[in-house]
Length: 103
Image (cartoon, rainbow, N blue to C red; front, side, top):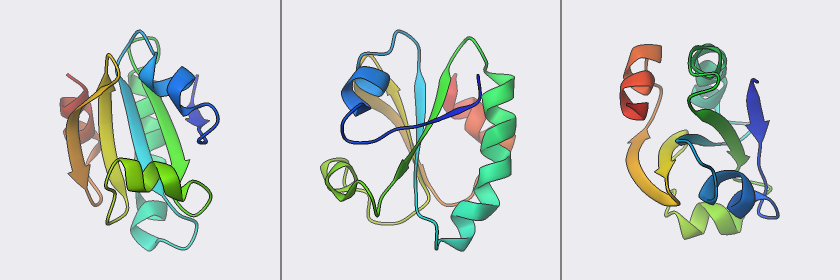
């Protein structure tokens, strides 16, 4: 399924109302660590296909979402279950560390 790009308009439907865990990457085009994380997230998306979703939110295009979830640094990863944040990390993480967050 790959990675879904989410905006303020579809965040509630895609993330908060999802039936399975959702990993959301808050990122920006100009962010070097975000670019380093991108291929790792592609691998995570392939690994969890069918059991979880991986989404990205561009903080420059969706500043209100970043503010709502108190994203101060990027990349920030949040795991949502049943509409609530259940795990959070800031910075580049390994594929295994991200998969562990989703468990």
